[in-house]
Image (cartoon, rainbow, N blue to C red; front, side):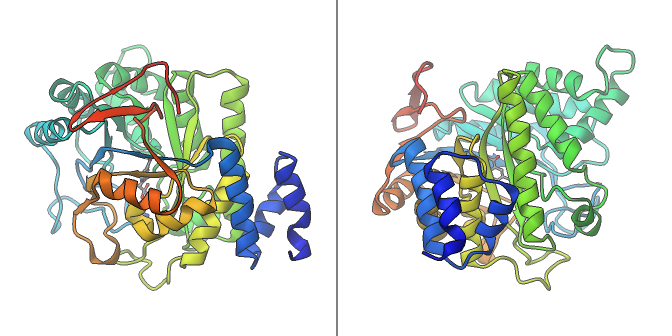
Length: 386
Ligand code: V47
């Protein structure tokens, strides 16, 4: 074993927290197999061979966005070719399909719409809840929520809590919001922010939205979009900030906290950064493993197969991954390798790829409770966590 990983190996085996420098060393190492072994050691201690997936639907309700982030191929301006937004009939239709297909979760995100009133978002959640009462609604990134807080203030003048993240979230929870997805975090760094997603909220604001959600008892996820203009140090700094935020939620006994980290490899096609190569397969494996090792206070590491491919998700299981997301079905934000909006995998295929890699597939709901399923009918034991 090359000597540069000896100290880190000893720390991992002793259950000690890794430092910023350790994280950078792990990202720079050419000894990918030792890195994988360490991440697998950590993952096995936490989860054994258990590997989670869910039966879900993604709903991207509109691609209209007031921002024009350079890395994003999804956003459109009003009237531009390909611009769309769902009305409530379309929302209801998708929610009904999700419920009928036995989905346990709808993952709902979209652009920062230039004109919608706050009531659009409460109606969207209420419609889903009405049509699909058993489906958990994981909705809106911290970026959308900061935008919604502004609209909430504008549309609720005089109401206590109007325009605050807390007041806005309370109204969304009442309308059916169940948890927050991890999107919109990108890379917590001012230089990267100014270069690639100027105008979007910065790291402190992103973390603050999640902190408020955790205080209100909502579970949430976190992401990092890597492989564009950030440095390796920026990536580790991002992970350290997430780890601190999770420490805070745990130490303050917040009812909510981060459940899962999802490293997202940048996909250049169709974006303003098309000239960049994007991360390589080895880079992706490294990031999954380093997320597992650095985020010792996160329970789960997810390999989102839509952006990583199913093959990489399978390989990722020996590099610290314990979750491969879900059946997805429709996805608009990235279309890797010429994929269309229809991007679906069956639960059977997810189980097979997990089994083939030597792991035990477990269907979970959004809150990582074990799902018992009979076709489209399913249930969870409220007290059972996996
Ligand atoms: O926030 C946008 C990213 C994210 C590109 O919480 C891109 O369970 C790569 O957050 N190349 C949305 N990525 C996806 C997301 C997510 C996915 C799966 C599960 C969960 C979860 C969250 O996609 C955006 C942005 O960071 N993104 N453009 C691109 N060209």
